[in-house]
Image 1: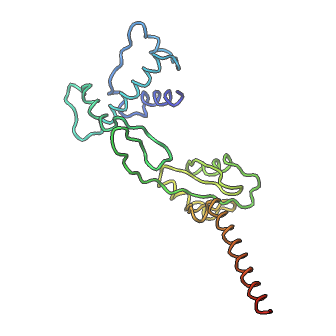
Image 2: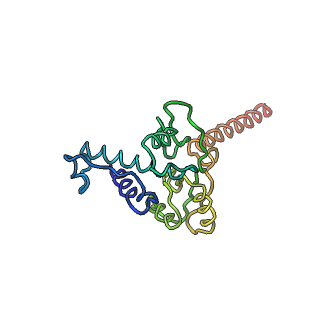
Length: 215
């Protein structure tokens, strides 16, 4: 609900370039209090909040279309038409697809690559400290991978390029592209086990051959 309130405030502020030209919502006589105060988690107010934001977004999308509406202003049917392409779709964050389409095939989405941070000479560093260090340049989701390694997630290719370039000479953080077969702890553990087994088998073969020759 906090996100909904933020979206509502932004859609009715100067940050929305179409705020002044958008549709006007008239409150019923028994709901006029919603025009003066906020009542989050009250069913009717929450419905008003969601509907208002949806209508503002529809108006913004409509104004960005190359062909304008008539001088009478957009009709409600115009808003339905501009929203039709988003019907039955749910937005996803940090996933292989940008949205789930409940009425058709999911559209493949190209995401920025994962980044990995290798920490040097920074004892007991945590996700919050990594986030603050990067926040000066751009924002990433940070998740610990190992004691001294962290994964970085972003939706923007620009941020990924910037952080790779800007942190090349950082004294404590070495940032590079994440490679599963190189950086995954599970893969590294498996490779170590295979290396131990292979070494043991080789030693057994060599010592076994030496014993046979001695006999």
